[in-house]
Image 1 (cartoon, rainbow, N blue to C red):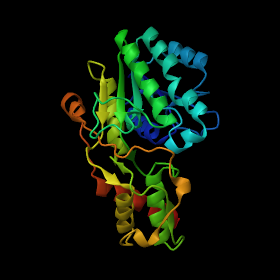
Image 2 (cartoon, one colour):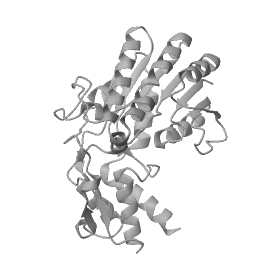
Image 3 (cartoon, rainbow, N blue to C red):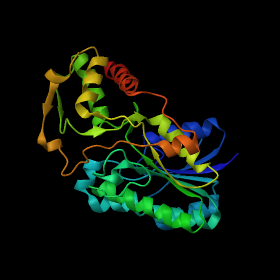
Image 4 (cartoon, one colour):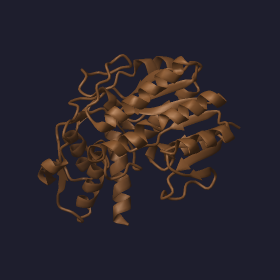
Length: 309
């Protein structure tokens, strides 16, 4: 039984990851915020601030985990414009004490990085694509990603999975995908009559979150640490996501229900993020298992059930 340490345990990816780790029989320890809801009963919870470098170092030196999964941080691109300093403090800087402690105790480390580090780079993006973020969130993830490379050069088994957009019914509704699927469900149930969105034309590579969590596990257990792009290689616009969601809810086209509001448009937004995950397919044996239409349908069905209650 391995000892595993997870940050960001209460988020979508953390929740899915911990389920996998418990199924595998590991001794799971998680750092969670003081205000976070109770985590799974079968894990050891350590409450504290991800910005507390001394706490991070002490926990890893005491636990001496075999694997460290760093998922914590401010996860919203839009919110990062409202609080760029806080985004850097929670999303970028904690990677340093985690990596330093991992180097000391010999832990394997993996970072959940983001395609937002690429900004407006030509699509598709792979591990060699220049890193030119367009948002404070992207910049914070880019710094953490670079720190992984610095410590890997020192001999630490440190990897970075550059995750493209990945969704599930566990997505908070501040994310546009969950906002769409919940909105479609509420309209289908007669609870709302319209859905307000920002940029309908943003084009993203959307995948099924459990597949991406599996990639993190494959990466941390690979014989050689590296960077891996994780995505489907297929893109759709926000409008296409909405059309798929409204169709899944039995409403037909989304056009008659959608309302544009510039208040939801970001100051800067990559035109197209599309993954070239050839390296992950070849070296990790990773591949997505759920297609776009099925992903959207699963989220809508979950929201129809939840909203009907």
